[in-house]
Image (cartoon, rainbow, N blue to C red; front, side, top):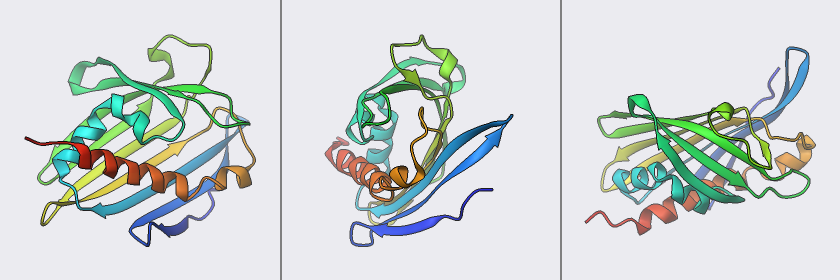
Amino acid sequence: MAQEWDIDKTENGSITVKSRVFNQENDGKKSQIVQYEASTIADVDISQLLKVIKDASKHKYFSEDTEESKKLRDLPNGEWLVYYLVDAPFPIPNNDLIVKMSMIEGVDEVSLYGTAVPDMYKMEDVKRMTYYNISYEIKKIEDGKSELITKVSMTPVTKAPDFLVKTWLPDGPSDIVKNIIIEAKKVNLD
C-alpha cells in the first residue's frame, strides 16, 4: 500500500511539491517507488517553457546529476526518443535512461509525457533504469504567466534506504522546476 503524500512549499511558497516513497511488490519482487509532483506559476510564456522541455539537450541543465541528455531520434506518430546519462551520487551507481516522449496540445495548454523504454537503445557500461514515467503540464495564465506541473513516478536502479531518498525531497523536485524556469527565461522568442 502506497504511503500518503507529503506536501511541502519551497522557494518562499512559490513551488508546491507533493512526494512519497514506498515499496511495492510485483511478481514476488519488492521495488522502491519514488513519486513526486512539483508545480508553480511563473512569469514566463508557455512557448518558452515548451521550447526548453522539447529540447532534450537542455534537460541536463535542469535534471539533477544528469551528465548528458540528448534526443536520439524521431519515432512514428510524433513521438521521440531521449537518452539520459546520470552521474548519480553515492551509494547509487551511475545509470542511464531511455524515454519515449509524446506531446498533446490543447487550447492554452500542452502536456508532454515520457515513459521508460529500456530496450529501445543499446546498453552502455552503466545500469539502466527500467521504470520511469514523467509528465510536464504547461498551462497559459494571463499576462504572460504559465503554470508548470511536472510529475514523476520511478524506481531507482538501486534501492537506497527510504530515509536517504527522502533527503532529496522536496528540494530536488523544486530545483528541477526552478531550473526549467531559469532555462525558459533565457529563450528568445523572436
